[in-house]
Length: 214
Image (cartoon, rainbow, N blue to C red; front, side):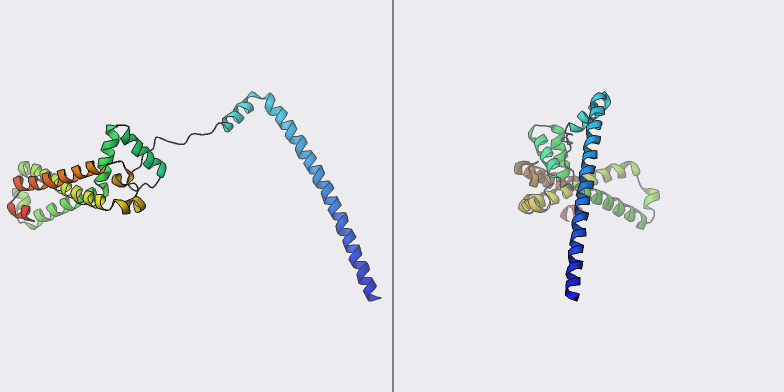
């Protein structure tokens, strides 16, 4: 008896589930018909409204990506790197100067300048009477010349590193000009040799021999 009751209850539950499914499907079909009618009425209103048509056309027009951007130091964007290489290959003087600037690794330039200022200031402070008796008219131009020599030495070091680490930089630092192809190996070697010759020559001609031997 109990077995029959459980069977009856199961059948009744299945019937109710079927009825609920039919009711849900009818509601869904009604909702679909309502949505279709709303969409058709909206399209009719849109077609009659020139502003809406203009807005739709503006949405359908693909937006152009900024193709004029060029890579800067630390930029891993392949499109920007490609644009920089293309600008150099097109013969742009500005692009070549940008490549030379990146070749010198600007963040190391800032460190070199800061270190030279700090060293000069400390030497003046530690030397009694140096600030009061300093001939600034001769000291400042000499300091500027020394700064140029330091920057050339900095360019020599980072340039040699980029030339010999090209294969590694292609994977780890593709934004560097030698690794990306913005600067050819011949130009890179010329910049390195120029820095390695002119920098020491400045020190030899304008500063004591002790500094040149360092």
